[in-house]
Amino acid sequence: MRGLAVRSEEQPLFQAMLRELVAHLTRMDLVSAFDDTIDYHLHYCFSPEDLSTWSGNVLILQSDDDPATTPARRLALRQVHPQARIHLFQWGGHTPFLSPPDEFYPLVRTFLHES
Image 1 (tube, rainbow, N blue to C red):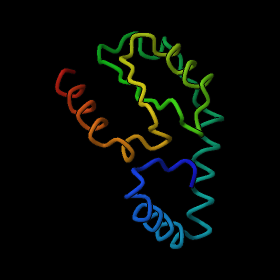
Image 2 (cartoon, helix red, strand yellow; image 1 turned 180 degrees about the horizontal axis):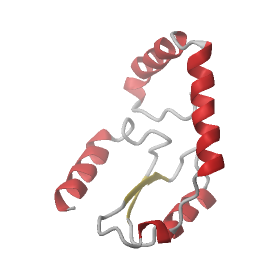
Image 3 (spheres, one colour; image 1 turned 90 degrees about the vertical axis):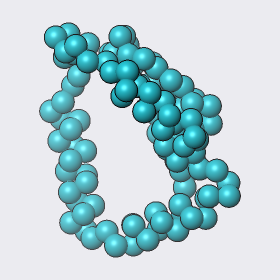
Image 4 (cartoon, rainbow, N blue to C red; image 1 turned 180 degrees about the vertical axis):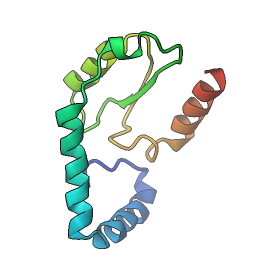
């Protein structure tokens, strides 16, 4: 479970939770998830212009060691949303909401209260 970055003492709990979740997935669940992913990649392409008339704020939360998001993809996301506030977690993996929750949730709360 390389993509799961949680505190070492919490790893057994989250690994067991994920195993339990996956154990109950049906073939249709998996097909549906793949269908959604394929549909997204075929029909949606965002650009900075998509938010040109939107007055809201954007927060990008990324991890420096995310195995699912390469440095090039992290940079591309920042370029698509140049007005975004960006936070880069150190050692957050693909799950910064699990790995440094004491850092993650206050950032999100602050952003939402300020927006």
